Length: 333
Image 1 (cartoon, helix red, strand yellow):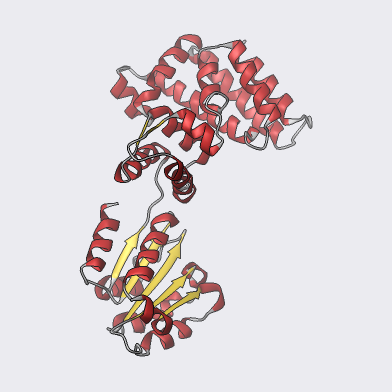
Image 2 (cartoon, one colour; image 1 turned 90 degrees about the vertical axis):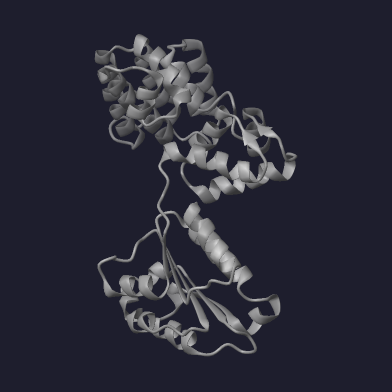
């Protein structure tokens, strides 16, 4: 985020590069920087004649160069944004001659999502020299919770741990989706609010009591009643609780539990680091380790693999709810 803040700050202070290559697996920041450039370099009056958005799938490299070389009309600069520039990956190197000698009055923005231009190639080096390269890396799951807290803190909100983890469990690492859901919360909750699991349930529709986070906890505790309550809820709401996601998360849990059993240092900080989990979860592993010795954990991982195969229609063609019930019965008994 510090790189993004620096880019935005520089543009705000009039330090503008002739070429911006925004590339990488995480599209969220690529979109944010591109939007900022579109909204802040030119005035509203100047944009009509001097701002253009192009799409990689619809153009050739020659179209970009021809437009980039023209002069602005009644303005100091023109802005050209090429969205989905990754669709030009086969010919992108043809932009080299322009990148080596860009038009000073043009701001060319290349939004190269989900991919990266080869850093060994001449084009990458030329843009580094004449412009700016921003690489947007995808966050790991254990980094997203901190990202949520930072974003909300910047907007004068706080959020408790369970609410954060519900968002991560339900939305994964897609920052754009998470940002959209956070915007919904900000609209309805006053500044200064500490967002809770109840707020998430009421405003986003994620159940605070019946989700994979709670299922994993109940399985770890071998709480038969609670496990059955949750899987019955899942059976009634299969679209929001796909079997493949549940199997995947349980597999991650028991794989990490296997690692937990092998640790000599089982202090909270050591376990959190070794397993790559939020310290909030460490007690779940401590409890589960007592209920599932290493031999049982190995058996469970085998059961999860079998259930995964069944969920894909191999062998007996059972409904998802029956596969889940059979799986959970075998795990906790």
